[in-house]
Image 1 (cartoon, one colour):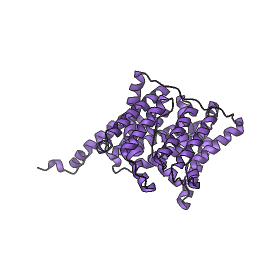
Image 2 (cartoon, rainbow, N blue to C red):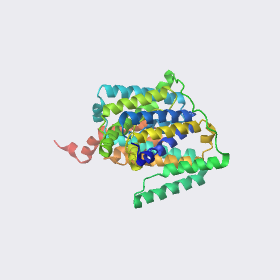
Image 3 (cartoon, rainbow, N blue to C red):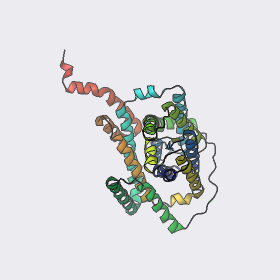
Image 4 (cartoon, rainbow, N blue to C red):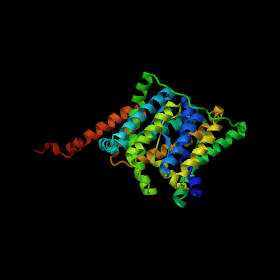
Length: 367
């Protein structure tokens, strides 16, 4: 039975999904209509398969780095294919627990914190300063609703409000767009250099985030909020299938996400109908976004503010670290040197820090 909460909860994660896909469309030349269409299809499948609000969203590390580096659709597709294959294998071999035990928690938090910093940098430099007045207005709206949420326990609908404001401006200036059939899937086959580029720049940073946030944290949150026990290995397989299929068909690689589950819950989502309704809405939006001018005319300043919302979410997750030295150093390196160097530094510090602390305490002089 569909409840009012399922209807309101269906759009709960749109504030993450639409800004990221929109920014990818603007910077990387991908079809927003097709990305939204495939995401909507997986929304519906998720609701049918899991019977509870198991969120669907873009791979955040892939999105953040692609936006910053303006990567090509072929490189993005290569990353989704590789990630899809890896997580299908992880799931079928019951390997999630083994992988979890070999990636230190502060390193995962460092990746999240670094991605948040990268998105903030892109939000300000690529979008915010281009249209500074609307960027400031967007930030004020975010801060006001955040304070309202703290005082009155309102759900955080700032991103959705900014989306409505941005499209309201577009429609006012350019008139209402015509509806059309959504862009249809097209087989995307990356080249060997695309796979090399994707593996180095996108796959390595994405794997720890997917394990921690898309699978392990999502499993825990679904059990806590919905009493919906889904194994980590099952989620790993579905992440792999989503990422692989969406990438081959010309869309953006997809995953689950604990933040998305929480967003659906905050907006009242209760059952699988939450995802089914959300998927139907996304497919309708896909028909709207066949007009590429719609996304290109969206106010750049508000896009910067929208990305700031997503970045703050990533930073807040990263700040839950139990070792700020490791996570913080990774974030700084990620901001200036990229995520690959960040991971190398993070793992190096994680391995060496016990010895460094021991030396500083003078234990190395004991016999």
